[in-house]
Image 1 (cartoon, rainbow, N blue to C red):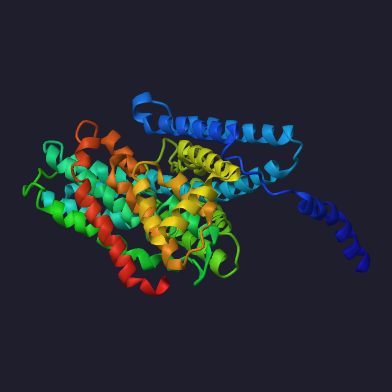
Image 2: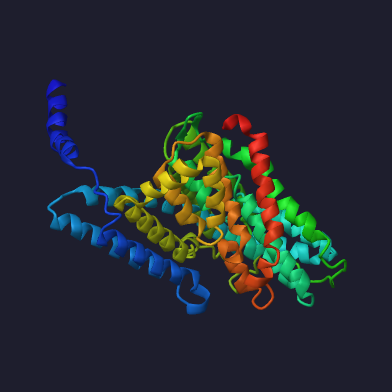
Length: 469
């Protein structure tokens, strides 16, 4: 046993010695490296914000900028004969991204599988065939978007409910505009109180932030439920009076859920439970629970393919046709542009943080303004800049905040994107889906009302969850 222990010490001693020899990163905020990196990130993000005009996928510019930023940093350190520092920092950022990417791939695969089984299409068909008036449909789609986005991403939720709004409001542009704005607010608010609802909440949960009042666990996010409801209800209550008090024509075809659709929904709920259990009980990264749940989905896909589909017609030989469900096709249908965009953002922001900009920004915001004002400002910034880089920057800064403050910035970064149509993936997607009706300027007219809900949700959080501060 002593020999084994000695062998382990000898093997690890070079790595331990190397770790002790690694100097801290240099402050390059005032050098050409820093200015070049800032310029690269600014140009890349300008291309992201004009994605619709350029018809250029948002992942391309940020991935290129990420590679160039780290190349410039590495070249500077190499030319000054400072080894290993950049490599270790880069690997740390890659590790954080890999964990989140695998988590998101599992979630996207489940969403795609439910879509392929017509789960969402059946819901859309049911809503269209109900004889709801415009005002009733305004509330039904908004409430459904709020709760669905707590488990599915806000992009999928907005597109699903947006299809309903477009289908019943073809001849009423006013309803389409107000309905789409309502969906953006609801989807962003619903994603704020659940770790699965938005990438920002997922990042905070997986980061396992340790604040002065303890770590932020899975159920801690549900303290944001009432503030999120306030954020959704106040603008919706005002907009309700501007929705046409009319009734659209009913109709539409009945769409049935394919075999196994509801079972996949149940497996998704089980997968969420596994992720929570792995993280809370076993103290393992939640992605392990998600990947275990993906394995269950793969076995269920195997079952669907190997068992006959009794709902289909038999062929000429009298045997039933097998199900065509292919799990790897659903994996391939993941939003790879979003995943690679996320990679580019993580690496760009990580590079700027390594240079020293995030430390300076953290000192200016959280040291000068105070946590509450800084976190409110973060939400306003996320209306212009995507909430992913904003939240990743805050997590990289790691300001010393209470649980209540971490929840505040999680909420503001999520719901702040509702202030402008370009502030969230839901808004950008609906501008494309309802092209010509729901536009940037149409959304901007309602920004004061949305801002009222934003302010009220912050006040609700400070009042209800004051003990967490």
